[in-house]
Amino acid sequence: WIAFLSTRDDPTGQVPEVYRMRADGSEQARVTRLPGRKSIPTWSPDGTEIWFTLHPASDQGAESDDEIHAVRIADGHVRNVTRHPRSDEHAQFAPDGGLLLFDSSRDGDALQLYVMRPDASALRRVLTSTAMDFWGSIVRR
Image (cartoon, rainbow, N blue to C red; front, side, top):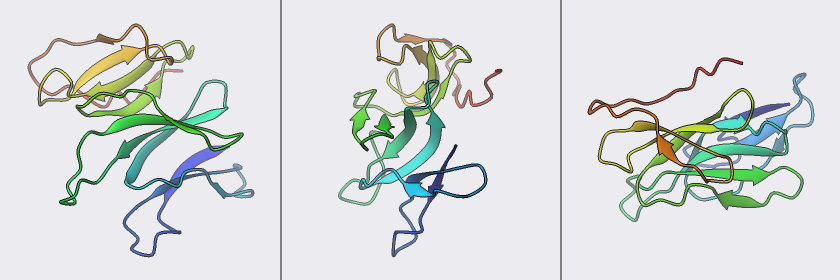
């Protein structure tokens, strides 16, 4: 299965939703129906969920409070995984599925790399740089 983003159902062509399909292009299905832009879909290690970043639009159209969400494929239930007033985004699972790597600005304005368990426990900042450290999207499998 492949998780991907598309604006095919948005008349403005501006708000992508998360979709899934088989590798041959068959069985395409929309799996999210949420206001706000979605990005960086990634499968859970057990294949039961797709995790993604939700960038909610504010009243002024600016984006704020990005959050990592997961949608359960079986029934479409969506849950907010990170629930923090600062930006959390770009989730990637460690090869064994035991940790989730993501970017966050929860300790200031610059994005930093964090890890936590998929149940949102054992959260810790990986780097203590004052520079912007982000997008650990290359995960060795």
